[in-house]
Length: 125
Image 1 (cartoon, rainbow, N blue to C red):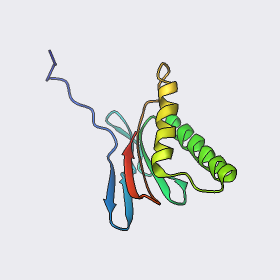
Image 2: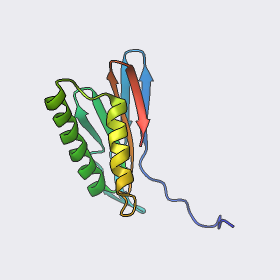
Image 3: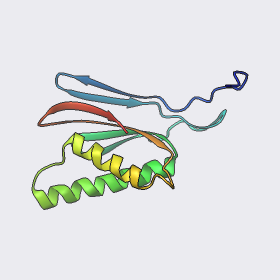
Image 4: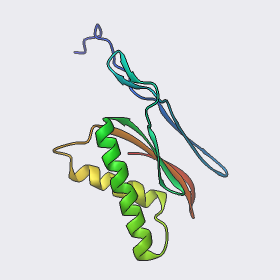
């Protein structure tokens, strides 16, 4: 039975919108620890490639590590294959990476969006 007397802790708000010509990703900038605002200018949105972006919520260190890994993997893909990675492929790669670390999980919720040959898309990972 749920104890409804406990306050529900709210986290970061991130939004991804798809429209005909592309994608809009947005997030708030506050970093919180419980009821305390640790920073009013935290970076929570990142450019993975020129056409793929990602918003983060959760552990800052975990999110930053995943952003760096994904940026490197997308750059390696482009150097090896001569074409850019699709948004779907990047989200699948990220999902597989998160799954392989499921016993020592990353405490993040990620929203990835971008525009590729298949059009605009947004994925929640």
